[in-house]
Length: 252
Ligand code: PGA
Image (tube, rainbow, N blue to C red; front, side, top):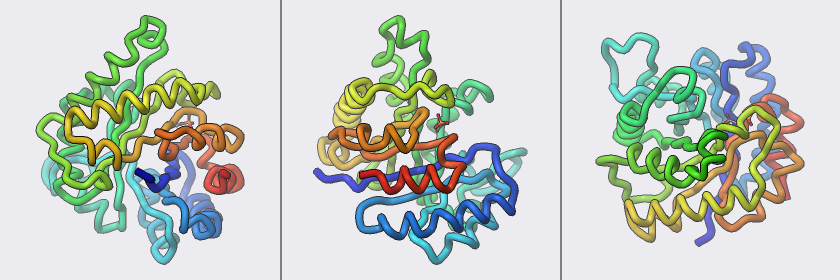
């Protein structure tokens, strides 16, 4: 099955409203030029969502959030509800990013709740998974990823593969300049796709988009995207610069 690639930018805790507005504006032409071939998403921090939303509302750029709570509203200090994100025009939400797991101690149970809340409210989750360097060196990569995927998907049912996106982001490759080789990424993506088939069914597995993330740069794009099971990328550092992210969007 041909899956439509997704090029996603995670802006993390960077930029201010002036810079964010400018970056969003600068990305519109590149995204428009590729509209026939791929989707482009950007995920600014919550305070920047209103200005970026205003900038991209008439463009093909999809607005995303970096995290999401499960509840519509209530006593959840520091959290953002799916309804609040939808009101700002968000269609996707990153969940379970390695920085959430490791710096803020978000565990599989919490990630499962976030995922289920996002789906219930009609936000498309980008579920991030990834092994640490230690796990890879101890040959635990597949075991770790299987644990993360299975627990994130407990009691989740998916009828349409477009409603969920997976991002494989090896922790050792995030922000380190060390991209996984295309063989390493492809091998994991095949494994995750099989697992999705196991958890859901073959149709979901062949239609679901699995992104790679971790030090993606314009120079590494073409090789990554040439692999059968790599359906796009989740980009941090290189998504903060209009020129480099436009090059990533324009990969050939
Ligand atoms: P990086 O970040 O591209 O800077 O490695 C990727 C991510 O954290 O999603």
